Length: 143
Image 1 (cartoon, helix red, strand yellow):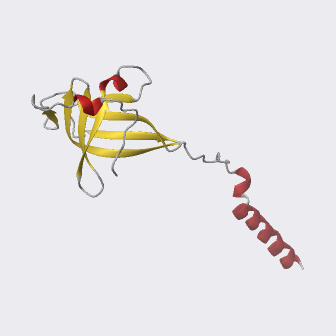
Image 2 (cartoon, rainbow, N blue to C red; image 1 turned 30 degrees about the horizontal axis):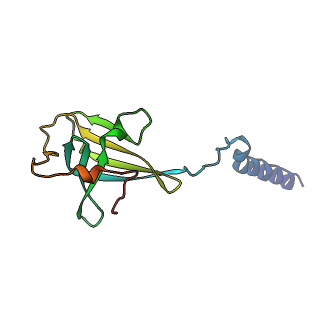
Image 3 (cartoon, helix red, strand yellow; image 1 turned 45 degrees about the vertical axis):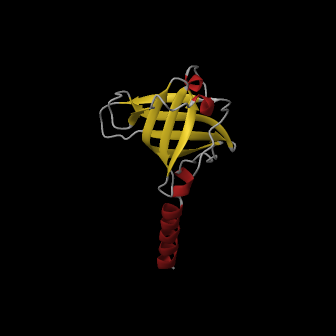
């Protein structure tokens, strides 16, 4: 009788020890899904124009695509554009396009400050890109 009592007591103590850790575990907050999502593109070439930036990026199928980003998006705090200048480290320039609830929110260009970097290009004088920067409200991306 004594053996049964001690075995039962040992079994209950072991069960509380093994299963009781949930009593002292911290509860984690519920994960909420963000209303933002983004696409990150490698910049192959960026051209500075008096009305904005012409960005050549590589889409998923390895095809080069061109987009036009107006300069006035970068002139105001909290505007549609942000520039982050990279140093001389190994980071490669990129374009991150953010969407909020499925609609374009803003773009972040991570580019080299040094304009002699091979990702910077010059728009030829005979190219008239003025009309390409007109009436751009959001970026239309090719994925």
